[in-house]
Length: 401
Image (cartoon, rainbow, N blue to C red; front, top):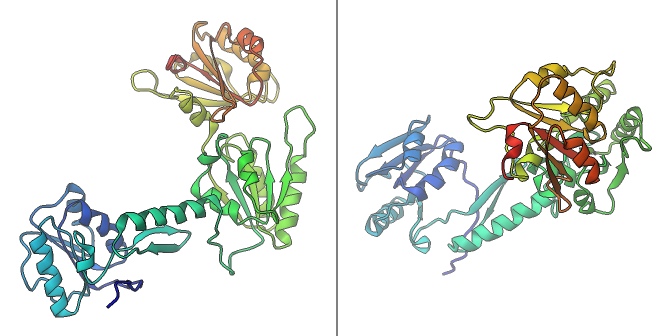
């Protein structure tokens, strides 16, 4: 006799499944059973609050009582997950008599089925069995999951949609702060069109066959015009290649992402948008400053510093910003900090308002500078702060000092 389990997927929709026990172990099993569409009957003396809540789900019944022989009648699958070894043994014995596969949670080798360590990814369900060694199964499962997220292995299928564009937010700088979906799509790319603020470590992980195009949209330097970026994406996508447009932060926060969506739509190119962790919130957070805090402020505003106050193209009401008591997060504001500080002071913002400046936030090169609204310009120049940097203005900027 061998103890090598046979890995199989069960289609349990509409089928009776009995779970004896309603503690933390049963709680972990119930979510996937309910999602499978099974008719789940839970029998236990007591239940955790989470299991009680699950008992109100469609297709689920919860009976707070002792297990009785005969409870498995009509079942297709059973789980014995109580903290009483004798009860678990009795459930397995009844399952054997009725030829029902049964998991025994406390002593896995005495059941007739073993629950794999599983995870879902890109429409797949991945399961790992190690003969009842749950910790080993969980470790291997986690390693596979991490490899998929890192792009070391791909879940791409032969019939994957090609010739499209994914607009992916790369996050605030730390490569680990890209979303799981963003990293997965990056691993499937044929072409990556990357901004300067996209985490370079993500590009270094790409396979050699991936074409990497530097959009080089550096402020005040040589620039690749937006229409040229659009043309590159459209050209590659029409050639049947999958293009990832990788941006720093979130693609819809001062990143011209929607312009690119419209350009692709006009060309008949399908676009997937993957939001990113915006630097406006993440950078202050990782510098120890929340943009909101109870009883301190009820608002925060994210402002682009690309256009100076008083410029004909400015859409910002600086007097209104000065009058508010909440947090101002200023992006791209270092080059014109004198003008922004002056506008807020003239509008009535107190000169001693705390200011936090974070350069290269979330990366190993991160620098922070603390100042007030009055002396922020002088300190920024004295310390040689350069873009990219986030400027936080408001009471919360004093936190963590």
